[in-house]
Length: 461
Image (tube, rainbow, N blue to C red; front, side):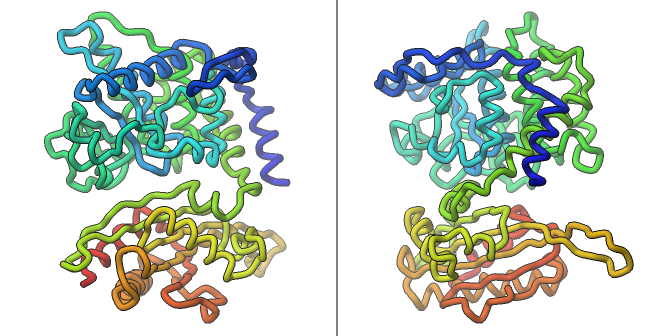
């Protein structure tokens, strides 16, 4: 009920339809070689540019001209921030250089499969608001690449990383041209330019600010579609909770002002616009009750190969899922509502991904009372689920050792205070071999726990 009321509140506070033209009426279109009479084709310059750029890249690939192209790519989690930052910088690179002696060809690559994009309903809504074609045919996703990344990376002009501090292993052979990130600098692309690491609520803030700074220095500004500007505002609003003071930085606020001034909402109050976007998109973002466990696992999945000192197994595949439900709630989403079924579904997913060690990071809230009043408050709880397989790259003995070092690293973080109130899950004795679940009450998320586990893997022998 609370989720539905928030969505309704968002719609009443701010109706996107008041500012944006809806998608074109259903019409016949050729999509992926198929005639689809009821497909809603995107309208407006932004959709047309994105679709044309995708087509041009595929034409150039077929003709062996991959070296002309720059891939602007975010992280594989594929949230609105990562997607928008990539689209924004790709648009800028192509348009800012179009009248120069070295015009650049750039395209945003979403490192999320097409079938997983709608697992983030806020993405679907933000793209719909920006009048993009239904079904994401305007976008280039990782599963649509006509060549494997390991090979393609060596042919490209280069890559730009947004909302991502270092490339995934499969892109290691690509030249890193620029990096924009709002997390920790991990030392990649030392020669990249621009190379910006700054603590902001949204990485889109950094990219949009750089875009506007460069745009305003041009002798003649290129056309900036209002749909892209409004998508930028949407991404910043989601990550800053509508520019709330405790969630946003000065850069988030100032950049949003500059973007708003160029958008179709320029006559609107910034606070009203950003609060309305936050209510609408974050309300939709939390409407996930219809998703099953497998979809929750793959909805926000990030993983890569990690180096180890073991000559027998020099690399290990490590994967992370972030899920906004408790472990008990996830169990209830399985067919049999039993612990064994959770691990069966999890095993099928990690086998498909070729993962040796996986970590699920769950977060949820519980109601608590202070004991002196009848007022209840929401208390945030997080969980860590650690699982190691022995059937991908390592055998049972190696898996036992790997599980041991990863478990010890997490429990040490509990003793050191990083993972406040770390303790075993209430039904931990029922867990199987190389399975462990903890709860904790800290704010430590993936950006804190992933380095712990990666360092443990890198010391495992």
